[in-house]
Length: 209
Ligand code: URA
Image (cartoon, rainbow, N blue to C red; front, side, top):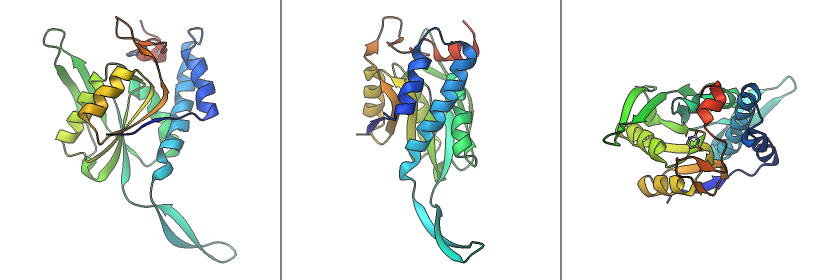
């Protein structure tokens, strides 16, 4: 079973409070999501492996460390996932970014993948799937499935807020995927919104309705 990590760093929790507040306007909301994404990236990358190298400092030779092993790929789910990409890229600027666009056919309820563009070497990368809201879990589940079908081997899921229903679905379907959250909320309401949540993440990021 994949682990669920709620990142309880005080800065993340503080900023999330302003993100949740319905009085927070689009500009500030976007900036806060960007900042929280960067802080979450800092926490999520804690376990990346290091290797020792030697460099010449102006004073002497030093044994020092650099990141080793797998390279990172960020996979935002369109459209709200885009709001978290730049914050993460500030900390991991060499990461490649793939995009997945999905919608659910209203009649069949089956996922329809309307867009996918990925780095060619996803099988060699540690992939971070990004979606601010893990509600029913349908989109994240389908996106992860798509990535695995195309060869992805190591995947983490990063969301701002999740409902227990979404976490359960991803854990059931993808027990190898660890989930990183800023908050695990109470439930979904009858319209599929996370409660208490933050409303529609895409609309709040882009000022649409
Ligand atoms: N998607 C959102 O943007 N918000 C929710 O509460 C649920 C799904």
